Amino acid sequence: MTQPEPNAQSATRWHRRPRVRRLFRTLLSPSKFALVGISGIFVNEIALHAFVTAMGEQQLLWAALLSSQVSTLTNFILIELWVFRGRQVGGHLLWRYLTFNLLNLVTQVIRLPTLHILTEVGGIHYLSRTWWRLA
Image (cartoon, rainbow, N blue to C red; front, side, top):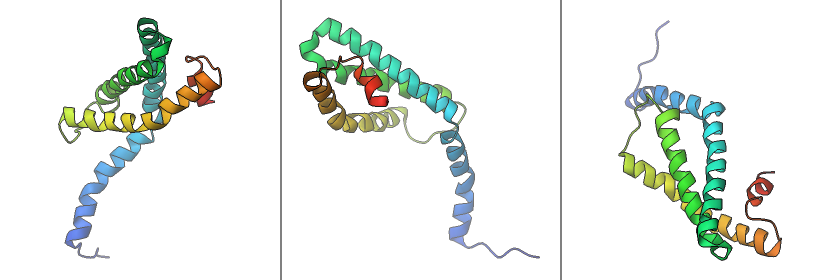
């Protein structure tokens, strides 16, 4: 039995399939991504405590924004050096970081008001709010 002649579109799709499969395999391998995510939570909490200690609790939202930047940077480094190690990733490193960080900045629109409500209105300590939010 002979296979049908591939047209240009199916040939392109066939060429892309191995790359897509590798990406899905990486994304579905929860161990590395989960460990990076969990480490990011700890980095964020440690950085938040350090920034609040240095800046004061009245600057909690700024401290939260800065600690989020610290954990985003460490997550990006771990993903680049560990999760995607040995894989060819397209784009310039700086561009990849900026797009990675952009997602973090967009989520701050929800996370910072939530932090304010939980701490000021709900009376929850700023360090315990992460664990409450994850539950």
